[in-house]
Image 1 (cartoon, rainbow, N blue to C red):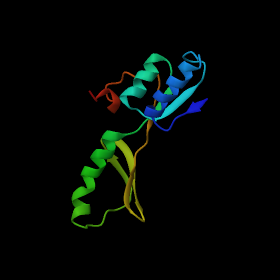
Image 2: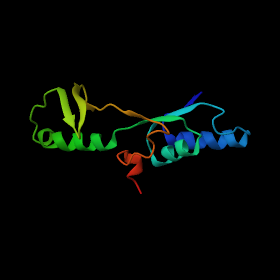
Image 3: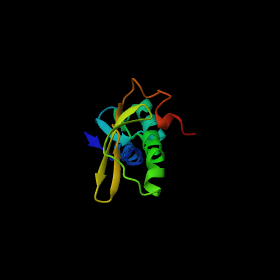
Length: 121
């Protein structure tokens, strides 16, 4: 099994595997982020799964709290619904952090138009 931290690394790994004579599916490969190239690797059969990085939720989370941060108002830690996803805001030594759950992407849901990697042109 090969785990790549992000799909741009998975694409390079596929190139190496091909040069070594490996075929799609011979080695289990998983990754993270849900980039368009990662979704293509799933469609092509090289990558069996990736974990979607919730990009849209992260941006909306920042927008939701930006005014409070700029105006130095207290932000309360806790659970928040951000872009329809239950998320959690924590306060770290460096500042507020929003934790959004990622979701697995496999061949069953790789064409979901809600995935940010399918919204990028």
